Image 1 (cartoon, chains in turn blue, brown):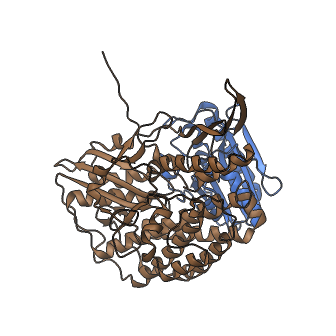
Image 2: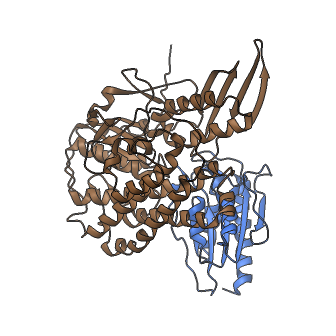
Length: 170
Length: 440
């Protein structure tokens, strides 16, 4: 199965009317071990009432997804060589995102490329915060590894706090 | 990527190696060894693990095949859905009414548009501009990239409107659709289709100014044909505009075979006549007269005659086909009055059926044998990239021979570009590997 098997644009939460055009995007494939990190963080945040979309990571449709949104949070698994479960953070408005750590096979047009292309086309949201969780195992049908599962919970809490600070108490 | 000069007894050998091809779907590699200005070894290697789809299908119901085989590819799922559906309908004697066929053609046009535009503008065009990737194109020509992304989105929107979602549609089934697509939802796309026609022509005009490498080949073109429409899901299989082979005779004439250097099966004609070409150029060469007037005019403006022999110009042919597909989209939406019934009735019986449609990359052939209970006894799928592999290697050989005086880095670039001419879908091609286990 490929990442696209997961409904690419399935809305798993709802916008509670914060007044910000806010969106959380969990990128990954639930059926490939630690690649589920993004969708799992998204799921945890959807349970808290945030608007979340799960996405396979194809760059062109990612850009479409965040167009018109002012505040976007994107979570994906990384493969950079860091210790499994390591969380990395980028503020895409302030810094470019390194290509090559967010893996996606389709035509090499993935999360980082989408962000950098959107920057060049002036299609970036005002705020685009990117979080990565370093994975260890990517086998088909495998569960997420223990360090990644722990990081998923930590990161979901961190993002919820961050967005609460953006929008005030929910 | 790595590149090295090595010396072994008998003179220096030049080795061009690309360990992981960029801007193609899936994982492939290239190895060329040249000694004394002669190619000693050339391999287009596919090393992605095989996925055993045919084995997976055995024992499952006929109705599972379209959705399961669609998972072979996220770029061209409609090709698999339609090929499998047609084959099952042939096996079960289902007569699909004209209105359903038209709606299927419409969703397939959406797939052609999004796949062709992504490849031509974002993945192939950088080769001709000396740019490494689509990012550099976005920096150099943001308007071109914006137009390409908007066109791609139109293709995706068509697929989502008809199929329920853009990737791996869920509204399609053997016999037709679960639910008739909404007339209104399709009609609102018409202004964007009008815009798209102009945008596709602008892109084609821009691409026609590229400096195309000097290489021609007298291809044996295999595509659908022998039909009135420019073929997407219609007709027989034709060979270089002449001979027509009915779908159920295709496997009598062509076969798959294993090579050691690829997890993907290759394909060849059984008569030993050598490699053949499937895909945009093969379709175009076999069916030029069936293109719309506007698409033919655009082709002429881009400098294309009715027969294309330079594989690098597949980029232009993709945009010509995009123009034709957009006109088809307009025609079908304007004529759409809803479906008399969303699907044709299907009754289970034993049978064998073949289906073949024109995936963006070329003919994708399916053959299934069903038992009396409608379960799949045997499945065979020949995707386009499997069929093109021997021709890709033949092109690489020709391009390298013609450019032996080129510096290694430049030659490597040209080889990668040669492979990208095919927009190869490597993930699709390695769906099967013959596995023999000997036990004592």
